[in-house]
Image (cartoon, rainbow, N blue to C red; front, side, top):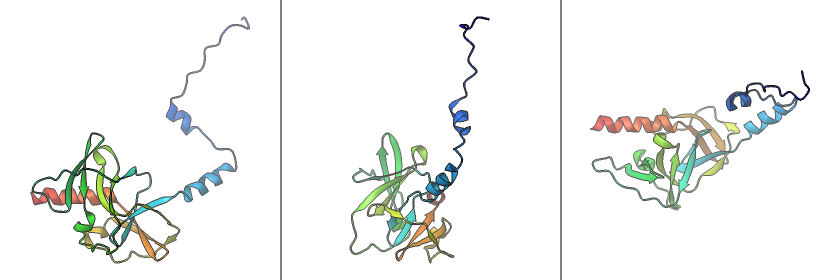
Length: 182
């Protein structure tokens, strides 16, 4: 066999298999776990309730968006926005939960959680904030009845409370409530 003969390369792995084969160098796993634990969390306020954006949930805040109302819907369903070609329902959760508006109310913003057909918009009070999840509370604070099933944990931060919020379950239940009202 000639030394210049080209060997047939081994079959390439698909990208996901190649990434799953990665093993960090010894000692690096501690840093990865620590970085994961310290990953910033963000929360938003609706009235006096602080809700956390779910881990790995795509979210964005819009300053100005045209909301197109839908006829014969409850007042807390504000309508639809066209977000890059996707129609996204927009809710006023503060109105739905019958929460009082803060007197020194900042501007309300439109936050969109998730994307595609799972996207949902809601008005939030002020811009999202970095939230600390270091101090877990042993029990949940008093919450509106409609929110209790969708808040699994609470965290204390400088006199305020942040709640783990199952936004998908909450908005599916709202959709079911609207379907039952028809």
